Image 1 (cartoon, helix red, strand yellow):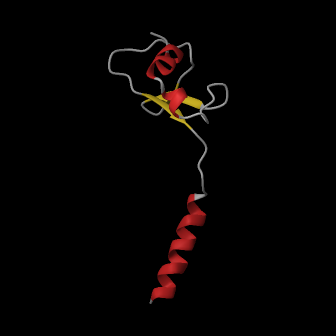
Image 2 (cartoon, rainbow, N blue to C red; image 1 turned 180 degrees about the horizontal axis):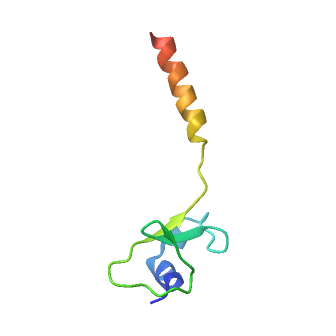
Length: 70
């Protein structure tokens, strides 16, 4: 089975409308793959989407809130 076929058959594209296979990167166990790559038994497909927030900004805000509580 190809990566793209497995993704389509999983139904995840209907659950998450923001996933676009033309723009989102795809990987197997953190290694980038192409949509037409063949899957092997036990492969876990990962769909990488953009972060919703900058992790540095979140940590900074959390630190500011903790400082205010002290």
